[in-house]
Amino acid sequence: MREPTYFVLAALLGGPLHGYGIIQRAGELSGGRVRLATGTLYTALDRLTAEGLVELVSEETVNGRARRTYGLTTDGSAALRAEAQRMAQAAALVFTPESAPDHARPGLLARKPRTT
Amino acid sequence: MNMGLRIPPSPLERHTRLLLRAYPAEYRAERSGEILGTLLEATPGGRGWPTLRDSVSLVTGGIRARADLNRRAPLGTALRQATIIGVSLFCAHRAGASLQELARMPHFSLLPSVADAVLLILVAVLAWTGSRLAVLAGALGTLATGMWWDQSDFAVLATLSHGRVHAPGIGALLQNAVPLAVPLAVLVGVTGRSARPRIGWLAFPGISLALALTAVALQMWNVYQVNAYPSALGTALISGRGTGVFLLAGILAAAWLVTDTRPALGVAAFLTVFTLPDYVSNTSVFWHDFYGTTSSSSLETIGAGFVLMAALTLLLRHRARKGTRTVS
Image (cartoon, rainbow over all chains, first blue to last red; front, side, top):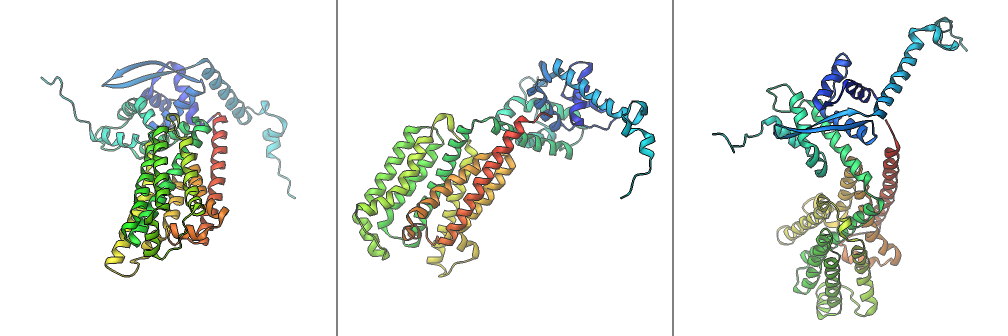
C-alpha cells in the first residue's frame, strides 16, 4: 500500500470526512509530510471506492456544488490494520532486537562482513 | 435585491475548470463540482491559478480517469469504434486523393470523382451518427457513382485528357470497385448506436482531409503561380507521405497519452485497407494513379508502421488488463 493511500485510510479512522477534511487530517497525522494534491486525493478515493475499502456516506450541496463525505468500510478498516501490522513488524526488526530473526539481530549485523 | 444575480466565477475557479477538462465528460458531469469545491477550500486566497502540484495532479488524474473509462469498454466495442476511425481515415484519405487529382489536372471530366469524394466524406461522417441505414445508403450511393464514372464517357474523356491507361470493362470495374466496396461494407457492418466513437476522434480523418486540402491549395498555387514545389513540406503533403507520418506520430502519441487502444487499432485498420489491396494484387499502376506519387518504398514504410501499430495495440491491451488486476 502506497503512503498517500495509507494516510487517506488513516484519516478516515476517526469518522467520515469530506475531501478537504481528508487532506487536512492526512497532513496532521503525517506531521505535514503527506500533502495530498486534490487530483491525487480523488484518484485514490475512486480506486479505494471501487475496491470496497471506502464508501460514500453522505452528500450535500454547499455553495451550489456537491460535497460528498467518505467513510471507511469494514474491509477498509481491516486493510488499514493489516498494513499497520506489517509496518509494525518491519519496524520491530530495527527497534526491538530480541524479536528479530537471527540473521537480523544487531549483534550479527555488527559482524564484519565477509569479503570474497 | 441581488436575487437572481449570478456571481461571476473567480479566476481560480475558471482556471480550475479549464484543468478539469482533462477528465472525461461523463466523469466531469458527476464529480467536477466536488473536486472544484475541495480545491477552492485547499488553495490559499488571492491565487489566480491552482498550485503547480494541484494542476499536475488534476491533469494526471484526468488522464487516469480516461484510461479507466477506456479499460471498462468491452473489447468488441473498442474494435468496432476503432474500425470506424480507421475506415473514416481511409475515406478521408481517398477523398483527399480525388481532390488532389482534380487540382493536378483541372478538367470537368473529373467532376464525377469529386462527387465520389464528397460522398465518401459524407459516409465517414454518417458513421459517427451510429445510423447503419444512413451509412448503407451513403455507401451504395458512393459505389453507384464510382461505377457510373468507370462506365461513363467521362472516363474516356479523362483518359484522353490525362493520357492515362483506362481499360473499361468488368475487370477494370472490379479492380476499382472492390478496394472501395470492401472497406465500405466493413463500415456498414460495424456501425451501430452501441459503437459510436467519441466525436473527438473525428479529428483524425478531419486532419487527414485538411492536409489533403492544404496539398490541393499548394498544387493550385504551383500550377498558377510558381512552376515548382514550394517547399519540402509541400512535397511531403502532395506525396501523401507526410500525411502518413503525421498520422502515425499523432495517433501513437494520443494512444500513449490516454492509454486508449482505439487510435492504435484505428490506424491499423486504416493501414490495412490502404496497403493490403496493393500487396495482394500488386496493381501498382492503379495505386500510383490514385494516390499520386505513392511508391512501393513508402508503402513498405506504411506496412512497417502497421506492424508497429499492431504490436503497440497488443501491448496496450495487455497493460490495461494487467492494470485492472492490480490492487494497491
